[in-house]
Image (cartoon, rainbow, N blue to C red; front, side):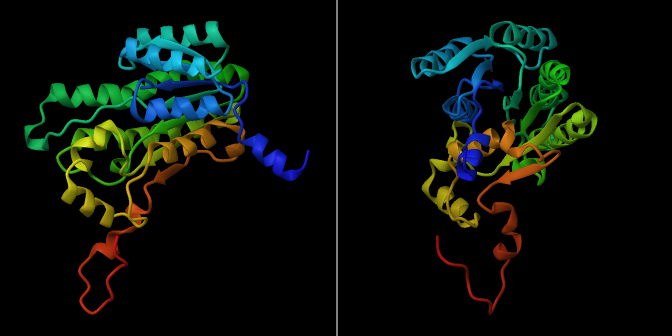
Length: 275
């Protein structure tokens, strides 16, 4: 086998059991499609059992092995059951993609405790629970990859969405905790932080032409990202091609987080290239 073939094979997920939370739509569905195309055997977890089953059926029709499992990531019994069902149907988990999440647009001074706890329970505690129960299977087999989906809002505050930003910051630290505690067992923990993406969650912003134009101007690449571009990075982290990547947070944002100085008013300095 030549070097090129070796490199291509390293990016494959043939036979690996990959569990994806929030797999019924948006980025989670795209991750399921991408990893299935790379040969993964999939456990698709979502609270929307009907929609999740439809995704699994479509993937099976394309030749993939996929199991739909109804799961509430905020409930430990539900997550424990999902992990056990995954092992029974597919075998021990090789990679977990913690994708399920919600957002709440509420200013801090108006944010009540119940709403704060709802967001944290799903976005942060849900990641912990899935990591705990699927991670035990990885520890037993002394190999595995945990990939958390955070957001650029986990590194920079999202105005009027403080519970979301706080929860996504926790997700980044949880992956680093996995790296440090489970690295000796051959288990890696990493985070992908998407920037602006064309997903149902972002539809309210991208459907307004002027808002879309201004958003593109704030991205170094001058465009909004596609879920497939984020899913490719997640698939990379799930597999053996990233075997020495551990404890990292990879921002997949088209360079948006590098744009601060470029966006400052600077009289006498040539303007950036138009979008």
